[in-house]
Image (cartoon, rainbow, N blue to C red; front, top):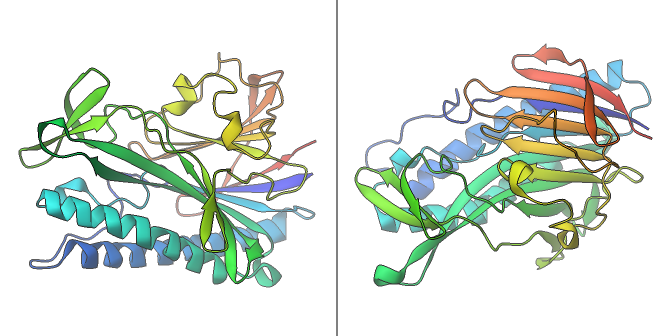
Length: 315
């Protein structure tokens, strides 16, 4: 099976399309303006990749397109208060899925071929409790969506959350203790964040959700995802119950500061790993594995500014 892999190399902490928040602008209006710019940018890049894959990869059954961790997040310094932080979380949880869904509707399979978008991640913070005992739970989630399969008139979409929080996920940490990180999120505002999230994978189903990540969007090629630190920390099989088909052939590392480990024993069924990392100026990588070990790097062609295209053959 021939598959095309497109990755957008994008610096997480210095996006070229990000604008400063205008004086008096609400945090929700600011997020909407940022999402508008990012969706248009991604739409243009996917169209370029789809046309190049159709021209250069005859027989490819699908284009996988990847974005890095935190792609949809605005800088935390733009938040002015805890109330705005809560408003920001609501905006992310409501609007990011809608924007990503609309993106796929603009890329019909009849024109662009089959596309599976691994849409980077969006990190949100949900407050638990009140007073001195309160803390924040992280929902740092990646949405996977296709332009081929629909439920009613909504593109098929699943959510894969990151399990482990690292010390750089929310800017500069000021310490950790008893299973919690402490981050100075903006100004002198320090929040307490649980270092391991309890959120499980979900799949959208006719307006509701089921507790399973659908990874069979390309028949015969189940795929898995690790978001950054999970790649290094999770034990093999630890999250198998959250995924439709646990034995995957392609494994995606969506990250901001996590390299592929060439000495690591990966699951033996994995034939390729694809990394998209937003740290620094960004990095994209495709490697081939045999018996669970990385043995070779697959060449990528830069087909547009910071847009890389590879082809792999999965058996």
